[in-house]
Length: 343
Image (cartoon, rainbow, N blue to C red):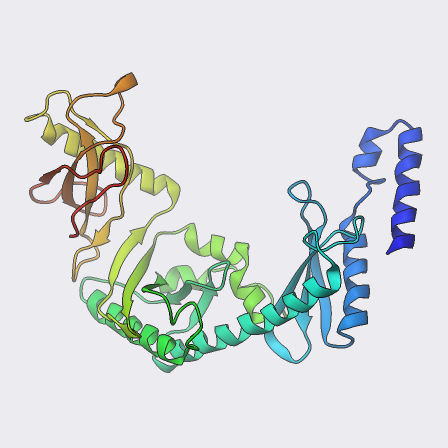
């Protein structure tokens, strides 16, 4: 890498002598993704000959400098190796590159094995995993939730989670977790997702931002399952996750309706704009319950900060309250953490 660094230094000096800051930042840049990829490939050829192959690279500038180079693994179709490298500095994540690459290969193989454990557990109970969160969880599966099916589907997926927990190594994060989550998207949304290329490593393809964006730009459901001593509460609880615009509309409708009702008791009430976690009512996807915080009197600048009062309310899909609201007092420890009663 020393010769490569000398070439880049000469190019930078040439740009400075020409007085071209634009050129220095662009065509005459000290660091390029192409050079980072070449350095990563040389490193791979030296330490893992024939085992990993570079398939992509993206710049990390201006965040940290350098590039992230992505490798496929020759004998593992699912595994992806990601290496953050700065050829200009001769380092990877500010450390010596050979060790970092060795760790990245081991991590890529381990993540692929963890994915297969997850995939097999869900395949066995009839739910295909079509996407993964950026860190490999939560999984995204496909199901049509209706009032008639929601309890059965949540229980079925809970059974998948139980299989997943049972199959996971005792020292895995899942085996030690107190809860697990599964995101559920509709068949219509899943059919239009950004699938990527089949030739890409599976873990890379399923964790891509474009894929997750194509799913989460629509409303979906997130199911949570408590875990205790390796046993999963398979009934689960679910909540609606809306895109930002729809979430704001839901919140505004709900906050206005609740404020209007509270004014009968608190004429100067201010309802917090903070949106708490809203959970589906058992057996319903068109009813959800959650808390709204409020202040009987406006605080500084007319807002509601560190509220000690809340209302528990059930609403329809648009945010219109359904039934009576329940006021709960003393929900905060001083100005610190909330202690809202479970519901």
